[in-house]
Amino acid sequence: MAETLARLDTESPEDSSWINLHYHSGFGNHFSSEAKPGALPADQNNPLLCPFGLYAEQISGTSFTAPRRLNQRSWLYRIKPSVTHEPFHPRSPPHRRLVGDFNQSNSSANPTQLRWKPADPPDSPTDFVDGLYTVCGAGSAFLRHGYAIHMYTANKSMDGAFCNADGDFLIVPQEGRLWITTECGQLQVSPGEIVVLPQGFRFSINLPDGPSRGYVAEIFGTHFQLPDLGPIGSNGLAAARHFLTPTAWFEDRIHPGYIIVQKFGGELFTAKQDFSPFNVVAWHGNYVPYKYDLNKFCPFNSVLIDHGDPSINTVLTAPSDKPGVALLDFVIFPPRWLVAEHTFRPPYYHRNCMSEFMGLIFGQYEAKADGFLPGGASLHSCMTPHGPDTKTYEATIAQGDDAGPSRLRATMAFMFESSLIPRVCQWSLESPHLDPDYYQCWIGLRSHFSYNETDEVIDGIRNVSV
Ligand SMILES: [Fe+2]
Image (tube, rainbow, N blue to C red; front, side, top):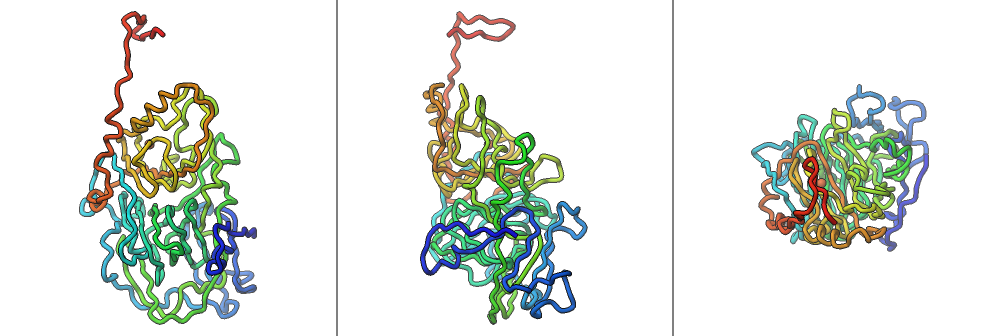
């Protein structure tokens, strides 16, 4: 099994064990990983006695009978099984800002273009779980169809472990690295990378850089996959080999009062156990956490005329039951060359039957001259018009057709796009970071229509004099 050395971002004695992590390379592979040689049963999944006295435990990410091409499960070989804990109880205090079942009691319909400024760091110690809050979403974790979009601001590492029974998390850190310990091993995730933590895995997040901020897409009832490439061919966009899965890592630690926080139906429950849940000495399977460096994305673009649809930049897609219709696409707008001739190069004005939530990791987004800031967000729901702001439109038109090739540099925006219409949580609509003047960025768009009486009109089409 191929292993890849983690990218080195910084080097200091205290974090060398994190930045020197090893990973398995590939997307959708059936991996085998051992922290102790010989810990994996050689010929079967659950022998009477596992090597070294370990317990065998399967975690299923799809129904047992899912078609083989979709079936995801892994076998974990651990010091004590995860069932060894006291009963779950509702967490006290409850979270109050997480939603897993969107309805009129917790969220509302709102077709207005919405934009939020970046949230400030917490003013009291706050870990990833308490710093997480739902912005919008649709559907239900109970009915296994839908999604939630969350954001987080945090400044404290987690003490216990978190387990999301509702769906998969796709985390987009915008500020601050994440050191994530999972049952499959450890990952370092830096801004510019993303990480997917599948439904049911226990994990704990440390924040080595202190104040941290980011975005999370959660999907109910399905998993992310690589998009089909169609006529692009067999290469391009996100390459399977650039997805990195942790290698087996464990701690044999007695820990009385260890807390597991479980998100179940959008509510939090806690259970105590007396040992670390990160006690998996070996594992094999294809249901795993993974990360991806967005800088490795191979973008495609128009090389003569017109602006392509944003789907050309899809990194991962979570399918719905309808062919070609996503429950949720993760799309990026990375650095790239713009070369199209006599073409309006920023994104075109449009109304979309899909709904679009956007975030900005760093730099400036090509369609907004100002107001859309790193760490901020926007939401343009189903059929709500949107597009470049007035400054961007006027600057582009003023440049004319003499622009020549230009390169977008030092920018990384992204979009969560869904076929389901999101309901917006009340706290997001009442947030002090909501920009009440967002609509003003388009109000200045003036008419450029001009009409010359000498223009020749044939069959209702005006042949404009130049
Ligand atoms: Fe759009």
